[in-house]
Length: 113
Length: 407
Image (cartoon, rainbow over all chains, first blue to last red; front, side, top):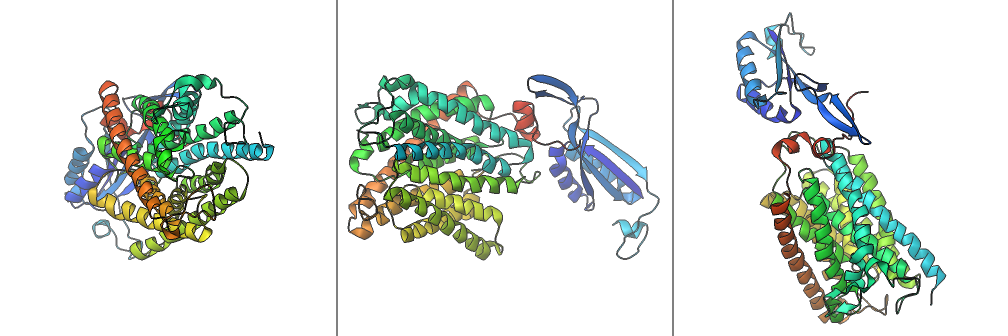
């Protein structure tokens, strides 16, 4: 089991979700986030004073998958979120120790899907 | 002769109509996605500022200056020269106060159109469009309907507080703008309305301001003022209830967004009729305005797929047309001897005159807006690029954001 965290542009959420649907990945958690990577934020003006380097709005996707779904998930996020520009985001993959569905008490692979 | 009671009321009414524009900003601002809230507030407040200046410099003179051939005023009132404290003929308030009251109408009309082009318009293009539209569309139309010598006034069209000049003109122009600009992008990704309570606040204070708008249009204090006041409230109430019931039947649930949309439709529908009809008639006018608004917003718009984003045409255009026509049916001299009788009171000709005024407003607004749009689009550009649209106009057009995520 793997735990996938992806940081993407907010306006790409729609297309990422569509790509994930195609790969039959339906379960995910989505979080509003702020962040800045290599594009170093944007410029804002406050009463005429420029402020550089503010954090940009991002969306964080968290998806738990079984091993055989990992490449399909990464592929879908890459296709959906990529514009070929700085700021497209990153994907992090973790090993997942366990997963428990609270309602039934199922554990592991069965609980994920 | 100046009447000081009338003057005191008209000062208050003018301030009430002024408040409608920032109020409209909140109504519209609450309905868009949060990345665009400031851009909408900005556009609306800037219209208040820019048109106030335009009006004093030459707008008032074009609209209400001495008539040239029934179509436009001349420039003898430019910069408010000769617009002083003596009342104009037939009025009891200072000329300058009348001009100020009319200024607030000139302000709110282009502000209404904002709802059609939110979330995708370029600020510079918007600014030039607004100045041209106010000068070339609003000012002449106000002259035709309201100024001494205006050709539609000569025909006897009844428009108590600006159903034709304001709501039909703004509504039709909004539809043309929405068609020319095209749809917004990425709508499914961002939830809108992003702040419905803000929109409810806006709608509530629009209702309040509309007393100044309609009852103020009597330009004095008297029986007609009171008629307009009570009719305004009645139509808004009837329209809100009507929309709620339609929502309940059609969508199986009564909604807050539906109720505020309905009440605005009712306020629009009663505007041309406010000082000419009985309270019972105003209830019917509000309800019918709401029904037609509902049909356009929930049936016609989805069917044709145009992105009149905040339903300026569906609410202001459609309810404005309904109100203007119903004025020709329900108007009665028993309420306002200076008005006329409508179809129900034995004067079918009035309905024809109303229909003519409506037709003129539709054609003039559609053609004029089309031309102004094309010119501004060619010279400056009207729509932001895709990236700016996705990021939101607050950040890309104004380098500000309405809300912070943390802190």
